[in-house]
Image (cartoon, helix red, strand yellow):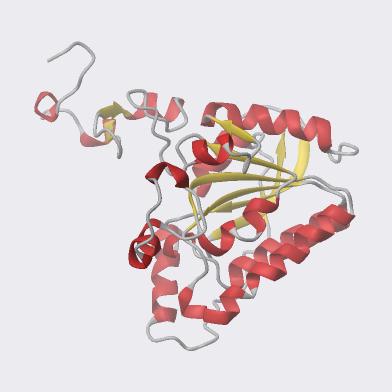
Length: 285
């Protein structure tokens, strides 16, 4: 065995929670070191998909997190078979009320609105509640003269809500338009993966669009493209390809995201609001 490599056989007598397997290269990583590296694999550079709590820990100033709009009711406009039960199960599994978390945080002392999508909640899909929370967040930030940072991760519009889900696309776009009219910064961060109606609406409307390295993105996902029998190169739906072809502005590793956001807010926010101390790291659990 090469020095530094870890095999399952060498860890039989070690508690399992000390180690985590990389989803990409399948190497075992020491959990504390993995967390210290912001859940980026030291072997292959794979960026693990984060929970809302983990994402907040990587970007928000300590003690600055205030959740908003967590009390919206479950939406089942079409009474789709077993859909309400699926929503309840997703809530129990993830501890989230829906596929997006919304609130106010400070980043480097700048108080901003933030949305964070979580793929664990029905694939990060966008239905009425997701669209409503994003819209309410933006409208509040326009009223309070704050910028907005949106972390996107989604499989697209939620099919169980059909046209109601699709209508969230123009609704969220109109809300972003209010940000533009108010001359307030709207920054999006595309994470793995970002597809469908979210890509075709508020994800790609940022004044500045960032993407984490290795993130998959596009309008139609790989399975949809397979069905249509269209032939495209697999690298087309990657952050790297989109960056090279001008669709996104900045390609960053996760360790760069917070500092990049701080710099952007310093440049774009017209006047600081509720400046706080800028210590990094926050526990929201």
